[in-house]
Amino acid sequence: EKPAEAHVFEADVARLLHMMVHSVYSDKDVFLRELVSNAADACEKLRYEAISTPSLLAGDPDARIMLVLDADNNRLVIEDNGIGMSRAELIEALGTIARSGTRAFMERIEASKAAEGAQLIGQFGVGFYSSFMVAERVDVASRKGGEDEAWLWSSDGKGSYEVRPLDLADAPTRGTRITLHLMEDAKDYTRRGKVEAIVKQQSGHVPVPIMLYDKPDEKPAQITDGTALWTKSKNDITKEEYADFYHGVSGQYDDPSLTVHFRAEGRHEYTTLAFVPTTPPFDLFDPDRKGRMKLYVKRIFITDDAELLPRYLRFVRGLVDTSDLPLNVSREMIQESPILAAIRKGVTNRVLSAIEKQAKDDADAYQTFWNNFGIVLKEGLYDDYERKSQLLGLARFRTTTSGENQRSLADYVKDAKPEQNAIYYLTGSSVEQLRVSPQLEGFKARGIEVLLLADPVDSFWVMNAPEFEGKSFKSVSQGAADLAQFAKPESAEEEKTPEAKAEISGFVALAKEQLRDDVSDVVASDRLTESAVCLVASESGYDRQLEKILAGAGQ
Ligand code: ADP
Ligand code: MG
Image (cartoon, rainbow, N blue to C red; front, side, top):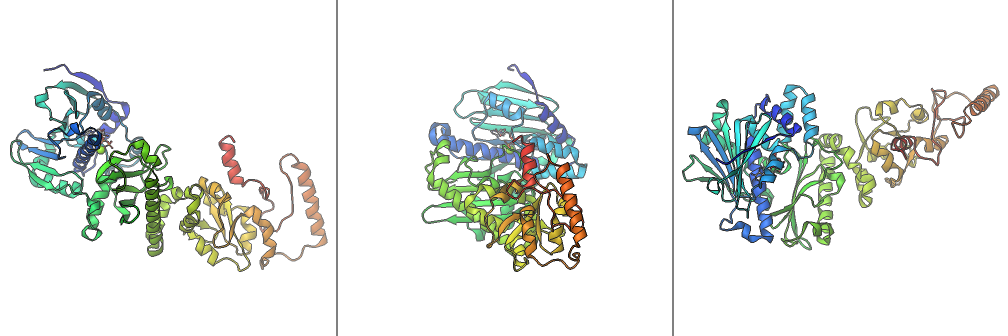
């Protein structure tokens, strides 16, 4: 026996493992989809590496995943002939947490009640560590493609793990073999019927074929064929198949709220299969979060770093497969490729039209979409110069007349006064606060709708927003001067008497004198109907909310 080195898990891993082991989560089956998906990823990485280093495939070119049932020893083995892990990679991958969003996820779980926590686990996908939901010990034997040493990682999930060198005879020729020593109450995972059903259902569409061995030394049966779902025709794919595939590609286990699948032909040839989740990903606002669209070239996975969609569509998951790029395209070249720029544009347009179609056809579903992702999509209102108008059409707002609903700008314009040629808005930090702002009184009294913009991003786009259906955006402070052109409200007071006017100018003079250094001017105004005074920004200056945000950012 070769010497073993002991390592302790990184603190976050220990925390995650503790949650796994003590999880009340009843759907433990998810560990299988996680291990199968890792095995498939490893095969795809190998395929990619083999483009430049064909010798990696040496004698064993066809990717496969093998599941071995061993009821006699109460074990389940998941093996792949993928890229494998070196000693350093084992320690890095299985002792730390790299996946972005995991910490936010754990915080949510710990803050939530048990039942909700269980659901969260199901939605997130918990990776390799989920094997400790069913195993009292996990052994990972791995040999990296092209290396002539192999390693065994082993742990009971209780705070530490061991790594030791492994005789090549005891290791896969290439790839990774994970042996789960099942807990007493997880024996069922050595039953063929159970395992086959779970794998077909959860992992039926991973792009690597899966073989099942009833016993360690028997002949296997192939239980999934490894055909890439996106290459099939839309009409041959069921909703469930799309959902299974989405789970695999996104690592999220809700159902997609939108599925976009199309093949572009002509100048550029590519296939896109993209999904909008129902549940917002945990790391939606993580500044490091990149898009999650995978790039394939002729069915070979190249990278998930190609920025195939603009940042404001970063909640979309899926892939693009093209035959227009060379297989050996370098990751660096990808960013500069004009072909990819054209594909990016095409995919963005398709995704946005699918979203538009949902807005038109299914207002309720769209409302949910907007509640989840509107705040991200709005980033496009200042980021994406070409598509600003289209994005304005998709935007939904709370307004002075919307109650709890949200309104589109088309609704706003349809209900605007005939003489109104602006879209009025007020920015602030919460809709509730905005609703009672004295600045709205003159508008409310005249029945003029005002958008209530309470997201931080609102202050940015609205400054440079294009016109919408011929109407420009105006803040209520800029718009106060317009009030005179609208019919006076019936409840308004009579013409002011000379005494009242004198009192008002006396008050204005006093206020100016007292506030000399704090305000640039004090004026009598039509805008208030109930409150005595309100603060406004100068008409040429920044909007007040933007001033606050900039002040907060130290500008
Ligand atoms: P994720 O798949 O989201 O990265 P996991 O916890 O599932 O997170 O896996 C962690 C890492 O461990 C993977 O990113 C990969 O580097 C490595 N890994 C896990 N399983 C395998 C495998 N079968 N072959 C090669 N590497 C693997
Ligand atoms: Mg994984």
